[in-house]
Length: 320
Picture 1 (cartoon, rainbow, N blue to C red):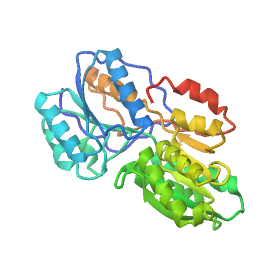
Picture 2: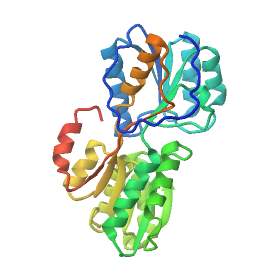
Picture 3: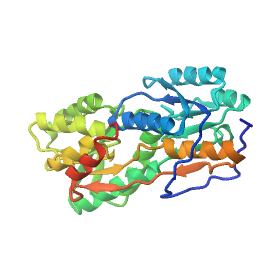
């Protein structure tokens, strides 16, 4: 494939619907972060399904949440001479050298669901949601939900240094800005996992009089929220009532929690990042058409009023 060139500026495609474009006779490397969450598993499943449907030979590498493993995988893909590389970067920094190597090899790179702090001419496009917007929606929902009541919030952050952790924190703080009655009293990484989410929530509860000083939990993903819900229950409190729970991703299990009254809201992040990515690659392969630097996916707020059991039934077969 010929060398890709950067667009002059980023373009946002909000709420765009994609019709699958065939991209047969292509070999694509996919470096996945790992399997830290149900959402991540669904993204992997859908990426493999999309590749199979389009006749793409997908080379898959699981980084087990380590950047060094991703860099090794990218270099392996470059050595194999793949037509393109998809990467869901575990952290935002430290990518310049290997992305330069891909560019020198004329192999376009597409970022999936996360961004990097590198020059935009080192990758073809990024297929992501607006991560700041996701956090802001969660914060605005909580501000509206509690009204004028004083509300101490504990926050479960995602993997330290990752773009979702940085941006979802920023967005949430924007969402509660101007509401002096809402205050984040504790914030710590739960590494996007249920196990760590439960462990950190246990420490929050212990530090805050068994949870009596906590009004709400904001988790950067649903899996950490599900783990935290278990910790709240074990502490003798009612999640969703004694401590409100708002999180991001909209994985099936959070809808079961909402159906049971144990979670209050979630902001959806679609796991189908590969479809738009493969469409962009197919168009580029066909006639050199360059995609915008940012292909934005749609997000949606769900609450207990949105028939969570029905949403669970719709989502449970998607590979989560």
